[in-house]
Length: 424
Image (cartoon, rainbow, N blue to C red; front, top):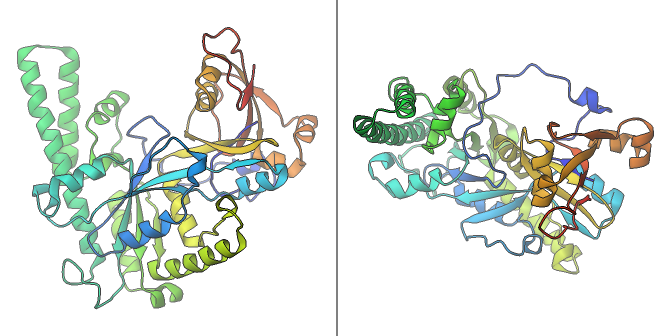
């Protein structure tokens, strides 16, 4: 049995009500890797609070025992994605093993003006951004004479423009280099595919160099998206803006820069909307330290250590997870309750494959009920009696919060039958 991602639980009592369409800005086109193992990087100018945020998130890491064969670099954190649905399922089933969803976060050194031309860490810094799939961009609006701003004064709109320009300049350089290489290819060999790729590249060049627009906001055709994804452009990555405020302003919920920041971001991303989350690193750090002390006092073993993550950090992690178009379904039982992360739009056989590749190869069907129906009705048997437990085929698109049991014919496959998360 399995279920979906760590998003906010539905506020309505039925699944159908929870999935009613709402009036929202258009969906951002999905660019980048077709993968569930995605990372988000913390980006910003020096001394804006990147290390403070990363150090806090590092204390909220998933226990290493849940991923015994994974090595985490010192500048990376695998952070639990808070999900009230997962908590409820664990309380309901009292499983021997609880495995939450996680978000992999990378700490990236500070960017400075001129990075695209080699200033600061220059190309090394920009290559670190290229290696991640999304961006937490920290913008500083707190005043502190003991924390020097690299530009001399606190001006978040200027800082936003610096980072936007540096990423665009690097993408412009990447696109022009590919245009030059593709043009040489075309001279050597006239080919329809090469010609189409060159046309795509010229469109991207105009978009980035002339219109000064990030490629993630373009309305691209399927073949253009294919070409885009071979370039690994920096402005293709979704951005979550984190506004680091001083304690007094954060508690008062006001600052002279907040409206100007929102106006700049809304104008830059129009007609799309990118998330903006105000937070105070100093307050969140104090809250987390208190929660860690309480958790250590209450825990008898490391496995019992459960740290309550401050609300602001929870929101940041959940928003980053959603920005990468990640969701998860659940498998549930007395042995284990587990979140299985997939990309939005994943079909049932591929979702089964995240549990074991044999389940994708031998996929028969997925037995599905929504989290909302399970919580409302109280059991799998009640969901079946109410007609809320359905068999879905290979074309079913797994939704966030689905609880799924996969059936697969693994007996005829070459590999030995897997024992986790489905039946043959």
